[in-house]
Image (cartoon, rainbow, N blue to C red; front, side, top):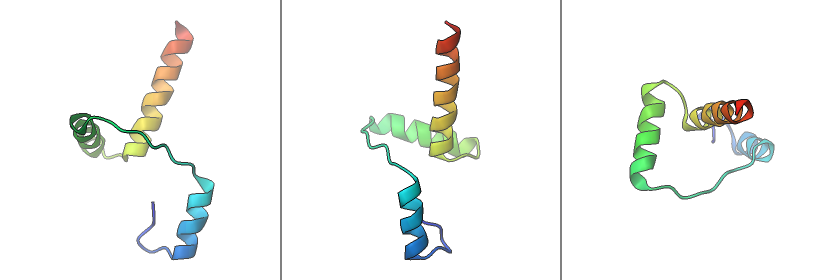
Length: 62
C-alpha cells in the first residue's frame, strides 16, 4: 500500500518488506469483511491478522 506522502522509492521499499496474499473470495464476503473492518476502525489486513491469531490460538487449545 503506497502512503499518500510517499515517493515511488518508498513504495518500492515497502513492497520489498511485505509479501502479498492473493486469493479470491465471494463478493458478498468481501463486502461484509470490508464493512466490518471499517466499522471497527481497522484495516482489512489488521482484521485478517487478528482473525488468524484468534483461530491459531483456538486450535492450539483443542
